Amino acid sequence: MSNIRIKNEIKRFLSENPGSEANYDNEKLQVLGKYNNIVFSIHINTKYPFEPPRIFLNDNVFIITDWSPQILIFPTIIKKINKIQNQFDNIYREIERFLHENPGSISILDTEKLQILGQFNNIPFIIHLGIDYPEKMPVFFINNFELFIVQQSLSEYMIFNIIIEKINKIQTQPIIVALTNNLYISESDERSFKPRDLHDNGHLYNCNDFNSKKFQFGSGFIYSILKYSKDVINIIIPETSIHEYVNQLLECPLIKELGCVYLVLKIYEEHLILLLENYIDQIYPNFSSLEIQQQFKIRIDSFKKKYDNIFSMTNRIDHLNMIITCYVNIWLYHIIQNGTVTYELDQMIEQFIHTSSSTDLYNISTSFINLGDLSIQNFNSKLFLDNYTFVEDLLRDTSKIVNKYIIDFLEILKDFNIQYNTNINSLCSQFNNILGHPISHIISGSICDNFKN
Image (cartoon, rainbow, N blue to C red):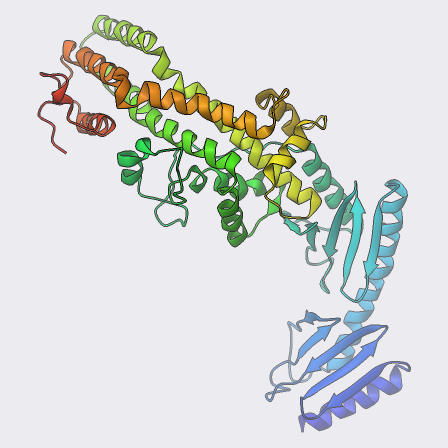
């Protein structure tokens, strides 16, 4: 019964539309045809006409949303193709306007694939219109990167406004920064790791021989830059690609060296500065008078001045943060604008720094990356050596400065008889970890005397 119905529809279609094509394959239960230069195929399932056939127009799926057994297939296809052809006429006019207003640009409509191929400001783009355009938003690509577009009402001209706006935004190169307020992320994430592992062992990493991908700073840093590029430059990077990019970038010496020392400094900062400052903020309201509170503040200010060398690590961290951020941003914009994923950071960064521009990224990068006569490798090595020497000579146990720093802080707490705060165990635990032995070994009578891990 369904075969007879389809064959009758084909006969009527061909008689009413000279020059069209339609052939029924009885074995495959499908019709192959052509109308108004658009190829179509109709795949009949065994439940037809009670379920709709699958229809393709130039390899694009056409779904009949309001199907009923009474609906005729060919009039529905003709109506849809005529609508697409009318859209072609409109798009040709918009392409002509786009080319007139943007000399040197390229734009061609591929009627078979229902897409526009073009180039603006020397950057290739593709706009996949689809058979439901303009009711449905097209999919935009710059090189091989899909653009993130907020759904909006569309006119034909707007599709070129969108591509112009996005390419211009990318070429101004706004800087994308990592989210580093919390060094580690949720344990359900692929790039996460247990904070206890980080804080118990991380400050002891040997950055001269560091190969642990699990704990490299890229777990939260590079990943964060790539993940949130969508919010700044409206590029969609699939999750699988983000992880692939991170894994490869972590092998690059420029990032591997600075990444390790950055991570070690960040952990020391959390141990020795952030924890201490948070603790001070918590105990301020508990003093019995403003006078005692002021005396405590004077002691703490004096303590911070005395150990300004330790507190200065925050400036080092911020500086390294911006250097690595610039490296990753330079790489990201390079692969977007050139359409080729490469990890030759040395050549890429040197070329970027030595090619003057007015972009946000260039201005920020040149304020932090001062090559002078140095190669980027030598610049990076010098920066790494300066920071890692600071770690080894000042922060690690051989210098004993950290011991003295902790002793002096605990003496302040002891002098003000501060022993009641519920978070003191956390403070003592962190100090024990950073020293590698109980605090009572170096100072007796402190608030950590009775603490046990």
